[in-house]
Image 1: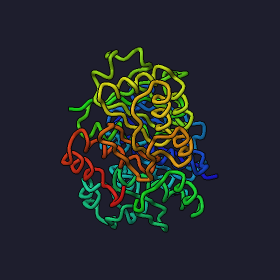
Image 2: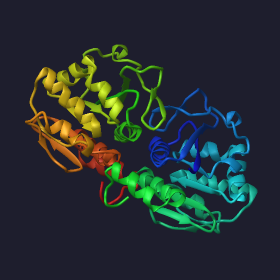
Image 3: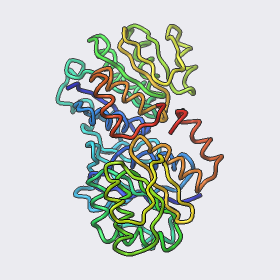
Length: 199
Length: 199
């Protein structure tokens, strides 16, 4: 089954972290979370929930060439967490490595700014993306990113999936299930969760 | 602002725990989580996320007459977590105390079974409710509960709010915001989250 790596920092948005982790696990993915710059052994999330990641730091990951092992890297939003990602060289390099290896990178809400920061520093192709409306300007001012207001944006050629906010987290997660695990997996997982008509 | 108490056990469903906690915090509620029967200092949730509650046990809560202090008690689903709630006398009494005090009780997914278990053991009025479809029979076999298939069911007279699964968690949480914090709060919080048309 596909393997997903999800980053988490202090100030990451809990719904945007938990929803892909939960939904991908339901779909049979091998999901691993890793802390970035945590002050404690848990992430103090944006609305005060405390989450203990599977690995406390990037250096503690058993697969040091993560881009070779995992199929997708997922960046949750939450402004403070996304800022940590965007200003941590190891994260910018991780994003770049996934992209160079032809693996997927997924970002939701302010998480898109970390994708943009990686491209700005280390290069790579700009893609069709979305983000939380509050950071749209920050994305567009870099130029070259094709901005969409769709709830979930998949750029198949660039292998980038992006989404907008906590209210889009289920659609984002199920979009990833469909991309890497197929349409049937999406339907099966979705039915058990009692989905709304729109996501 | 309203005060909410959310229970969490090993095997609780992470989306159903995190979504009300996050959304109510966004709406300015004072939200506190408390562990029930945890094996570690964190809850090992249903899809392997580890969450550290604000208080590790009911006995460690600063307000021992919780039903007097909090305005609403929230029971997330996840079959193993809901079973722990349903078989822990302190939880059944907590539910009963909230109901006798005229406070709200909210349950999502399998969480509804803990509400039913409390009523069965300690009495109180049966209400109009929903649950995850997989535990509908368990609810209906007790008789007297008016079962609905709506995504979020509010029984204003009995002060019971129930919902169906992780896919209904946002509607459940925003329904609680509206009930205790007003329609405007719901709209304001919802807009920032980039909601779908249906919840």
